[in-house]
Length: 235
Figure 1 (tube, rainbow, N blue to C red):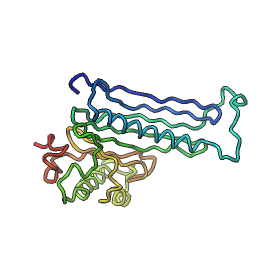
Figure 2: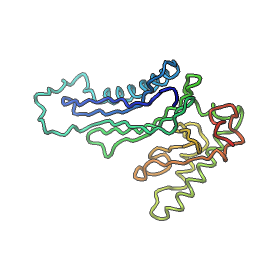
Figure 3: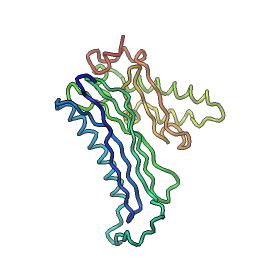
């Protein structure tokens, strides 16, 4: 950023001994600017993180028919049991555009494994609004099909490279990366291409973890909106 604008990390920490859960969330905020569009980004991020934390805490609250445990009766060395952890990666940060990917992991005591997934914030700082995938491409272009076609081929290639030890399955890929907009809600903007994240279970078993595909702008240049957010990256 120029003009003294900086990204600072904010945190939410909570340790609830009564209900045996922990909250740790870290998220970015922009400082050093009086531009209202920068504050709109800050608000969008805060709203997302607060919603995730509130959702977790609501799930941890005991039913009304059950009394709230007394913290005095909880041994000091007893494990907390449940938690939510939110971190982030800054994929792109420019005066006119910022792209953030959050990693959300929540665990409820007794579950087989944590529930992990991605959330993204792509924000047009010039116009003060969150971006939709459609904002990147020419009106009427079959952008979902184009992105899907590239991702399916890339994932199948990854599957072949992994061989018998891999956990990617062609049928699973065909479903989870199909040209349906709901399959492409986790996307980020980088200087090299459009990053697509497929959550665990989407194109492979949970043990395989999330899968990532970088769609180069060269594969999208025919449908990218020249005066849109990606126009500056297309040569």
